[in-house]
Length: 184
Image 1 (cartoon, rainbow, N blue to C red):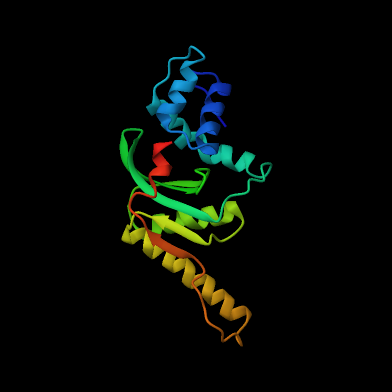
Image 2 (cartoon, rainbow, N blue to C red):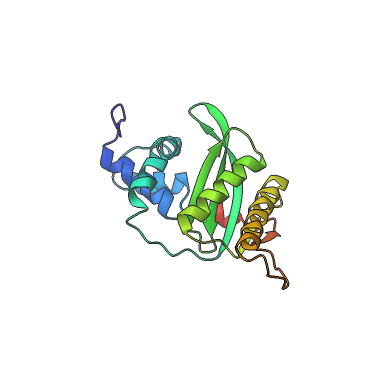
């Protein structure tokens, strides 16, 4: 990965991105922490670093960290400016506020939410029992599609099963439950 052209050392960039991905910290929280090292940094710079280096760092580190996530997740999206262009940031955290996955998209639709949720399932290694969201129809549709896929796979593996089916993922709409995602 090329770190040339940045005004901060590679170690500062990696620490800032790691903190954002590992803990429920905002860009402004990370800005304050880095300022304790007498390094002048803007939260928008941290955001650019997360966009530029986040997926690369996740791919390098995830296989060494066996994080146990809770089975109740929060899914939300926000509108952010990245390199002068507005886009949607989808983010999934568990109920403790640990980031499981994030995804940037130009559109706010069920495909973007679906990509984010599928990535979170792949990273966590399991299907959550519950996903809370603010009631966005795109998020609800994405969870519904994944639940239908899971049910179809269960029926394909066990065609003789005829007992009562509870949904694979319990989706709930709780408007302010997701504040954990961006408030910490």
